[in-house]
Image 1: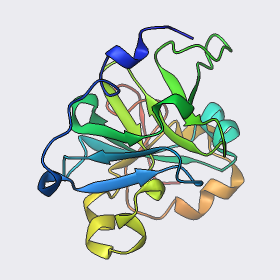
Image 2: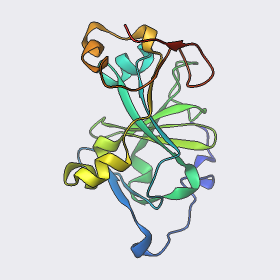
Image 3: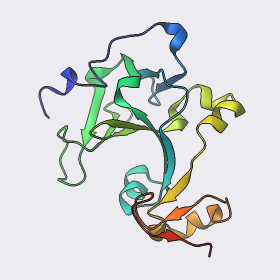
Length: 174
């Protein structure tokens, strides 16, 4: 594992005033916890790529994209585990998957500048329809790789892209 990952955002961020916290996130066992200070994500997407399907154990992954500077880890930094699927290594090489060593629950995908948080890990997501609306996905990406289980989302009115949003062909309604 890269030895200096804790000296870079989001792991090195300074705590801000508690009144600024918008979301509280944690792994399943609660060992790892972090907060997000931004109310709205930069974007929010459903990803249907094969990697997300396999690594999430689900037909797609829902991620809310926040700048790395907008979060603060309150506990569990030493319990983080990383996986870079391009190099098939558990080293902290960006981009990478982030999960808890103890319960193995996925927490986020870490990019070079962004943190792709999974809203299902937010305490507020489970209790507020208003919060769910703020985190609502804007589109589907890698829709050409969707599984048959992804078909139930086809009529949700969101744009669908073959690969990355606005960098690939948009798939017209089926």
